Amino acid sequence: MKLKHLVLATLAPTLLVSGIAYAQFKKPEDAIKYRQSAFTVMANSFGKIGAVVKGEAPFNKDEVAKNAAVVATISSLPWQAFGPGTEGGNALPEVWSDNAKFKAASEKMQLAVANLNTAAQSGDQDAIKKAFGAAGATCKGCHDDFKKK
Ligand code: ASC
Image (tube, rainbow, N blue to C red; front, side, top):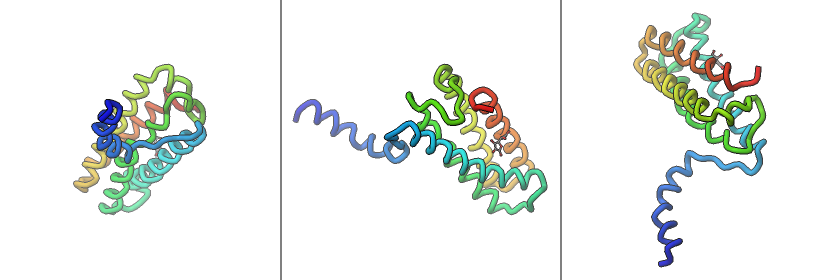
């Protein structure tokens, strides 16, 4: 077996598994559309939880749990679509020029929405309210630094 084939054979299972979670983009516009779509889906479910937290919609435990699960699941997806050469859309240049800070902000958000999901699955309204506020703050924090106004 040639070395190249050995390397490929060794890596293939890992690439297959990680490939499920990693999109590829032909054009920068495709990456922009992908990340904006992911944020749109997240904002929709997050907003539905927000309406409940603000008392504008009745508390339905299962609905909140479903929406929190959507937010938590989708939260891992947008970041792969901010690769080199995909500048634009609503993103400020700082996403690329201060990428470590952007990455840290993205991880903060993912942790916060994971906590929101935990609270939502428990159905504890006070915990949901707290976790929602904390998650919203991580959305805003990242928007302040990295999203066009
Ligand atoms: C939302 C939404 C956001 C965040 C942010 C929180 O519902 O769409 O982007 O909350 O506004 O400050």
